[in-house]
Length: 400
Image (cartoon, rainbow, N blue to C red; front, side):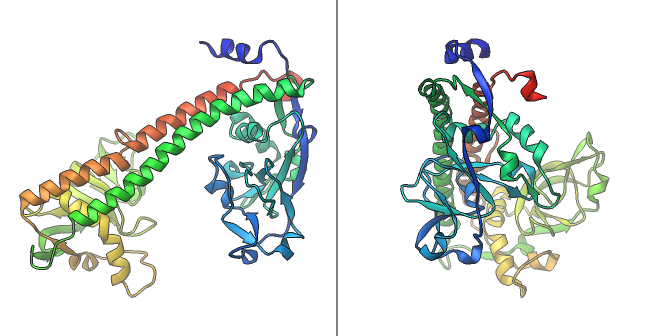
């Protein structure tokens, strides 16, 4: 079915009007809520970060509270209201919306605007619309600021929303409900997959800890310096070439490219400094180039490379945090690697353990075959249908 025939069937001949948000309900900017105001119990409060945490539009119950005395001074949020972010360090997060589905009246602060839907718009319909490119384009026109970007409640009120059959609120809400139910189904599926991924990660961690735990005396323990060669590369990030022949591992998750290689081997790569310090992002096989502040760990013959990979990936970050005299490790030096303890069961046992952990690793982390890939595909499918369901024609005078 083409997008045109799909929308024609959905609308069943009714007209669509684009109306300013101010015509569709009441908008009230929040006020006065700060982190220091939060309490362990009291009146539910929706704070800045919660809109991102719960942006799946599932059933919302706040995790934050304020005292009843303070709540009297704050803007109220009723069940069905939409809380919209007004400020953020990046434009993408401005205008994100959360439908409050809690049974108890909540409050919110000055970071947000509360939209109280009128008779011809569903809160969830509007919340889904805020995820579209059309809405993003509109809010961009009103954004102010550089370090902190703000779209005021007054400007938010000017943004146009497509309303099918506005002269007949009952009919309009029926059409909106159909759109919402379709998008809810995709959202629910993605949520289920995400929940499944969380379970699988916990399962992976459990089996990993079981498989890498050895009773005293059952295996010999050595240090990483005994069982692997450790070193750095010689390149800087600025050396990278977009279409380079060889992979170039720097300090972040995203590998770069280079026209020359430093090593031809199997190695575990970890960042020497920066945000990824002590974490393993890459497993190198074959020819590659390496950043001067990234480390290569090359297991010797008595060690299975994937077994070493799982040991380092699982425990090295925690090890250096404990071993460091500083409360926060910002950079690594080669001596910090040398004393990292590692068990050395037989090669056959290492291979068995590595094979099991590889399966869990693929399921929980692979973007080509695991649950992350499935979640990404579902998100793309959801985005496609969301754009399709909001592909209402926009009159020239509204879009000008």
